[in-house]
Amino acid sequence: MTEITAAMVKELRETTSAGMLDCKKALTETNGNMEQAVDWLRKKGLASAAKKASRIAAEGLVSVAVDGNKGAVVEVNSETDFVAKNEIFQEYVEDAAKVALMSNGDVEKMKTFNCPKCGKTFGERLTDMIAKIGENMNLRRAQVLSVNNGIVSSYIHNAARPNVGKIGVLVALESTADKAKLAELGKHIAMHVAASAPIALTIADVPAANVEHEKSIYAEQARASGKPENIIEKMIEGRVRKYYDEVVLEEQAYIMDPDKKVKQVVADAAKEFGADVKLAGYVCFKLGEGLQKREEDFAAEVAAQLSK
Image 1 (tube, rainbow, N blue to C red):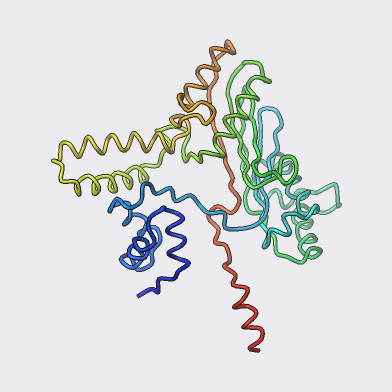
Image 2 (image 1 turned 90 degrees about the vertical axis):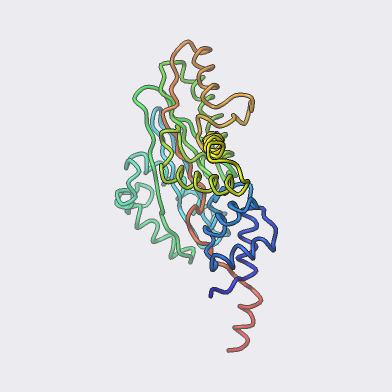
């Protein structure tokens, strides 16, 4: 039997906003499995939604670089936030996005790029920085977004310096419209992405496994209400539509005008610009997504040192 710790209960409570005792019971019932505990709470109607947004679980920085109809976003990790404030590290992360543009987002190719600033490869530059600063670092990931005709806009949230921060977003717009107008629209949509965390561009892009998982949750909730099956089916359909409104970029309520969906904002812009505008894609890197942050207990560390 897995021991249910206070930290586990705290994490589940922060994820679901459920009560502390309910969180402890959910973890007990699922033998400490965090994802199953979230589902258990939802099935009991004790959690309003399973956002399961990846917590920022590593330090470092994200950077973006754009050149006309092509943009890149990268993430470089460090052990501590202290290093993320170091100008040498910040400059490396900023340059990483520019190298990603030239390397088409291929991290291994980025490492072999000959860096004119130091006369070494970009990977060797990272090794030298690790030796100089004295902390492990990792060029974790990169992605490039481009369009044939149009623009790629970017946005950085919690900026440490221009184009470098904690969240980096790229938005691609296909259009022959005025590029300055497109760039402004693209930046506003990128800000929306940073705030709203969509998981897909269109309904068709939502993974089928995600939809089936949501349906199973809704079905159990509906059956618990004692409704007949034909009503339950309609309830599930309604909840799935609401789910799409929450996680699909085109279907989300636009943060700057909640009465409109993002797709309507794009359609309105097309009319205003006098040319078709297509929201062709987006990329969002949030620092530390999917990484497990090291939990540190300073008091325990001191006690361990004193006991040696």
